[in-house]
Length: 199
Image 1: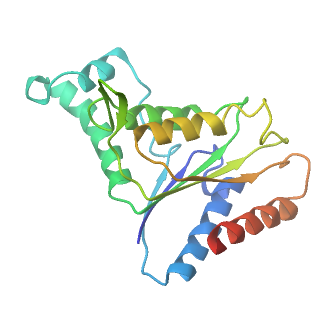
Image 2: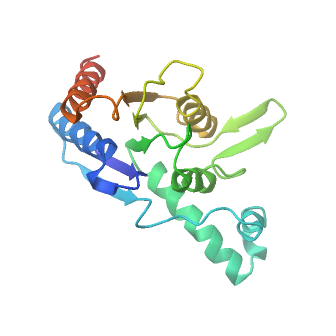
């Protein structure tokens, strides 16, 4: 079983979201009884370039016509897409910053969502091109926002992931991080993991 673990918190592997992701990976290993191959990407250590006109232009230039600079720009995106498409399970650990996702995760998504590569426009409308069996999003928040109009993060993530071909997105919310003890937050997240894996 190949697992791709994406961390996007400024606190990296010490963050609440990353700790919950590791717990999920441990339980997936036990439940599946398969040897795991884990690819780990901390977006604060290996930052993905934010979109620029030059990068965007590289995406839309036919491969045979790209300059050396455009080839390098597209290669970064190609590698990120390959990491996702070659995985069986995608785990995204994401805190809420100012009601959105960290800019590093937004940059990763911008390299992942590429017309002609992970989705296509057709006469019938947009068509997803990626194939991913399962995705878990660990969403940590200081307050309580899930299933309220203030949660502008989870609906956006679910929409963009489904748009490119990741239909099964399960959320593990760890809320009230600034209001409750760390033990309570982790315990609630652990209960949600058990619920998902026993379904």
